[in-house]
Amino acid sequence: MNMKYFGTNGIRGIIGDLITPEFISKMSSAIASMLKNKGTVIIGTDSRLSSPFIKNNVISSFLASGIEVIDLGVVPTPLVQFAVKHLQTNMGIVVTASHNPPQFNGLKIIDDDGIEIDIRKQLKVEEIFEKEQFTFAPWDENGSVTKMDLKQEYINQIIQLVNIDNIQKKKMSVVVDTGNGAGSVITPELLRQLGVRVITVNGNLDGRFPGRGSEPNPERLTEMSKITLQSKCNFSVAHDGDADRAIFGDEKGTIFFGDKSIALFEKWFMSNHENKQFVTPVSSSSAVVDIADAIGGKVIWTPVGCIFVSREMISRNSLLGGEENGGLFYGLHQSVRDGAMAAALMANILAETEKTFSDLVLELPEYFQKKNKLSCPNELKKRAMDHIVATVPENVEIISMDGVKLIYDEGWVLIRPSGTEPIFRVFAEAKTEKNASDIMTKGMRLVQDALQRLS
Image 1 (cartoon, helix red, strand yellow):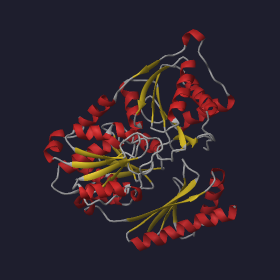
Image 2: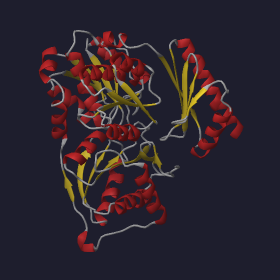
Image 3: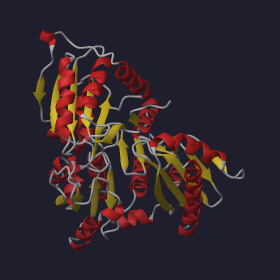
């Protein structure tokens, strides 16, 4: 089902292009009109410069629809999700564009179970928006706004899920790079309350993301890496703009893609819990299958997107999910990706062992991954995808759960149109770096040929 405004994670666009005051007012009126029982909505924002005007427009639309609003201020997305369930409200709205550059912003819409609304409700919102079927309350039944601070309640729940005594005895030091984003208000404080010595990098809120940008790619985390090594810290952790993801580095300053950290979480969890299911997108490393097979667990695949992982976890009563982009879903806390929970859980894992972070990574099954992307206008994505599928060699196995995953004897490549940006993403993996590079070349050539044919 193709949607006009919703992508993989909510609605995103460039300020002054898609994201204008008029668009936000209409879209938030459509969201409010979808709520039949009105009730109460929680709102939070990331640190972007455009977030205040968007938040105020959203609040105005909800108040005009007779809905009560609780304003949490600048907080991570997972804190809003926690608050929706904690306060038993009808919905949550997060003003964020997550890892996108500072000129972007958008809306994540959280259902009453703390998970982003499903595709059916997204389509309903778009239908109301297009038809302008808005419902407003009488003048004397408008809602009101209450400001609330739930940061400590959120921190308390995370602390209850780790062994604080072990962590305190370990006397760990950690570098935290929050990238000037919303994680600045939570993760450093959480780790300090766990007894961890914290060194912050880019820890001030700044919607320009001047430190290293809003996306925690390993190549952008050089400062975090240097400080970790110089200060002899146990590990490092970095967040994206709304802090629902966590990218980790070891004590030697090596920064890893999320495939390593979710494999560590999977191995630890399956070794310590009877529920040995792990829910993850088709973009994840084959290492998660090797780990599950060795422990007697099971991997459950989903399309790419945190909504799919969350919903699958709920439907199967799974307690752990993970994404290769650094998203950890810890169901004992909440079945959504949560960067602060990931940071605390990593401290917990290291506190239980005498091994270093690098030791634990070396024990994982070894695969080499390559990641790339190519620009593609949104309106060409479907035609390009159709062309790619039509030109795949006949002897290659195809998995079409999300985009196309091509299985070769040496490894695999996943080609999929991004749900948040005008690009194609290409992931390749193999047991050797050369094979991973060769398979990446094959995947990139398929996309390039399709785009050239359509240009």
